[in-house]
Image (tube, rainbow, N blue to C red; front, side, top):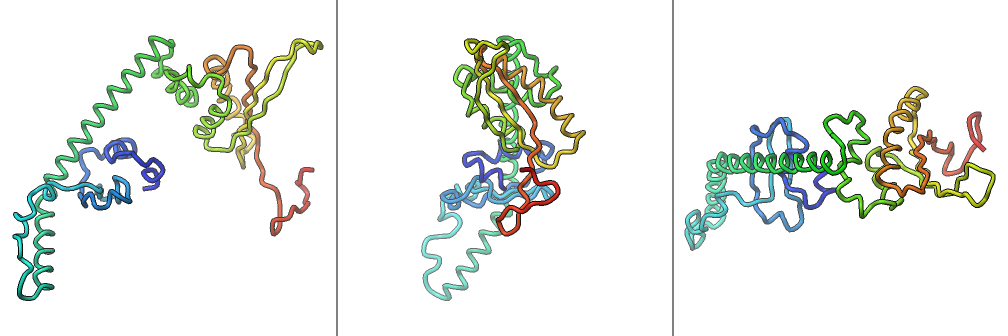
Length: 260
């Protein structure tokens, strides 16, 4: 799973509750042992179609004393290869026999993880409504909702222009250009106001998509200006149509729509 590789410490319970909440009571969990944990993630493989997941965890079978499964000295004498195959086959049958118990245990942990997530979300909703006057359930703008979730830590982030740029990249999944400058509403050079402009560089937008997105980010601009920026900073949030340079073998070529 790509997401589990990108987030090293994410647990299988958190990952599956996030991606496939509808499969909570359907997962079949194969515990392949903690041997893999030294160089792999919690989730070794995943098949949503079959509702099967392989984990780098010990099964209940693996917690039993080893001599109950394979008596000491069993490999001594006789055909060692044949005895090894016999032990392997026996362990395979035992693993299949313990699979329902491993699966039952894993599904219980999935439910526990979901319950914890629900409590955390309820607590966050309460904090936002009580201390910030924001009702997430009533907020229709998805971009505002995303940034509202981070308000409990706003004291550390207010005015951090580079961090806000990184957050915009994560939310809009595009490159974002940060431009800092000055602005004045009068002719006087004594009345300069700091200006921070973020340009969302999004390729291949149609005129209608451009107008829709530009309208959708206006509430986000107002929200960021209120909570994420000092009062004396003017914030601009713009959508820019990003077009790759026309080129051949790495060299710029001119054509009818090349901008100079």
